[in-house]
Length: 620
Image 1: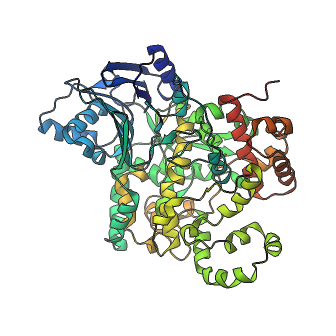
Image 2: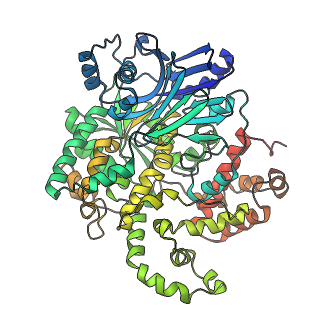
Image 3: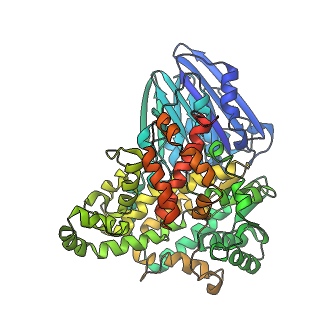
């Protein structure tokens, strides 16, 4: 696990500038760092890396790393879990190795198989390779988007990094905000790939690679989730085969992710996914594993008691921390720096706290991320199911309720259902509600925030459409981004066994009826978990992992909200409609609707980010 950055341009930058870019990511790799630059007739290139040592802790794992013939230079963030198998295959092909780390294997694999190598890697990675002879830069990102990778492209300048901070430090970079992305943030709490908050700056799509040569950039996919879904649906499995193959892959995936030269453990929330991963870790390791949980003093939000029961049953070395508002609010100051792109899912705060807790004892943690998207676990999927069943009714009722004055008096959720006319966005109807409010705040109704990917998802079952859509957007750009930034703040590597690409591809072959059975979400995954943990420890309503936003916004954060909503400053900033912001604050004070607190929190998070990275209008 590391942080990487670099550039490819017609002009060389100073070594100091490259080092400063690299050092903005010290938290991602406090164990070592390195930079390399080269100037040729075809331009100047620089690569840099901050290292968190996980495999081969010796200096042999130092990066940038070079091929044995010095024709390839590379920096790399992540882990390739099947590197030992690939190493044997490459040795049989004549390659020799001097280290025990996967970076050297990755470079040799590229030399042996070219771009095809990315599809051979089982892991999480963001890779930058530079071919010295052809002056070609290659970037690649893992299939599910576990590891982040940004790039900036303007004129002859091409810059890449694990985070935005190094790019913002690049000489000549201009922080020009793409205002359309603010609307996406307000509606979805994050900005999905390939977009970013800045113009000319992008996120690499998961499962893709990029080639930069002679000032030209080409993007290609080596693994396409839509294509994999199609292939999976063509080879449906029986229930028995599904359960058997799922168990085998979960155990193998967990075993691969326990390989490390440093202490490992698991995040144990008390839910199905993390409990299954913990049980599998106990099974394959043959010894007690370390588990970590965060608890809340409010009973309605606290799952730590259930996590503790599961930990006792599995015999883990369990550690928990109960947190209150004081501990959580103390993280607000650091929030913009470590996320460095506006991001407003408030569960990032407890995720940071459980990462801090775990980092005191381990350097690698396994999590249960991915189970909800792959096996139909979110409450949203119930709403999508209901909406599809009621579509015939909407077609009849919507024209009758066509009068705008009457329609506006309806509850927002019902309006969203009635307005759900476009066949390209059938599973995104709740976004209508957020879009109405965001348009008031920004005054830019023409900016589209719905995910265009759904146009390509031609599945009869709306739940399947939404699940694949979430795998392409919400999972990499919200769930995984949240965990990556929260854990890397404390130099902790988090691995996600359920997102092993083999499990993803298997999930596409498991008929949907085995995932959502008579309203029972994640049916087959639960049945697998019951083989390791008693049903009574797992069968209970799911609780959130968020924070009490409404209370905070009305009390402890109210003075800050008012400060960031100062009418004169908002006019100078020229992003938000001052009167609309004031109205949102008043509505949030009077109403308990989640929409108002969610949007006001997003406004607050953006303003804190703007103050830190763009312009401090409030320093008076």
